[in-house]
Picture (cartoon, helix red, strand yellow):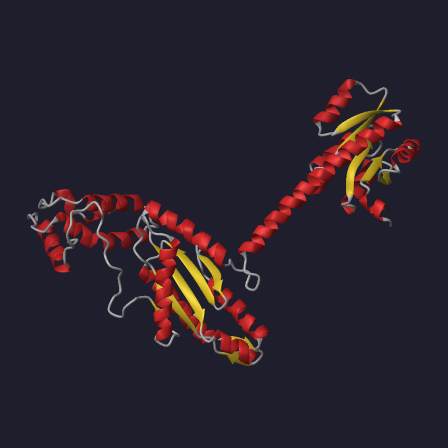
Length: 415
């Protein structure tokens, strides 16, 4: 098969008249590869097994399956290539304009009347074939772009999102958290002594360990979570709407599962140890992904200096929570938060109908973490309400004592 033959477009000529098929072949043979069918049913069978066809030319009136029937099958095909094929309907001189209009309305690309002139038939066939190849080239180009985009965002070894895709997920989740006042957590999972494993066991085993670990980290994750390969020996896990306590629990469960399972090579179990850093800082309006990554990265360094192989969730052993940020709108000075004893005393006073002396702002700030936890148990349905409360506290200034009303004493008022 010559190069010129390979580059020729292929046309399927469907006509029950052998004379018409021979005439079409003589006119088109120098510019097309030609396939023939005696009726619509045979033509449809040819289309099912040959994806290289660029154009169909079909007679309107045929036994078994006529031109309109074949056209209908083509346009209703589930195969995109077949569905978009240009179809030229050949009508007889006796066919009226109504038949031609019906053919065009049914999806015919063009029509021609027989006996056809050689110049007219060739010109119309060339025009339709050229248009089809142009559209196919555009489609192939778009498909290639999508495949390339997918390859760029996927780690080829594990099949997980890569670092770039992980950073994009962080940006989106952080934007959502800032907008809706929800929490956000990130885990960094680093394989201990991966380079030593690579040197002792070889590249194949080391890479198999990473594939196994990537699969294990993804087990049981929520649809909104993202597990990615962040670096050579490090994985990242993004947990939207998760607080430090929840993220820490996930990290400890993963650490235990990895240690207990190990990686199996035949009958041998290769121990795999990991260090997991957990970050769930207070989200603020100006936070960016670099700040989040810096926080979790610092925790990972602290864990490695301490010997690794554990879950690190604080920057200092004596600190569990992040420092409280002073809202810009508030007056200078430290933010006052009522103590647990103050809250208990206030609740007792309210239940008795007495007046409490503690600042209502202080009390509201004290119970805010409880309300946030309650909101999470209700699928964050009340985030807007909490956001309003935070905004009101930032505005500050309400120091009036609070007196209970009968409706306030009901526990249901919290809901």
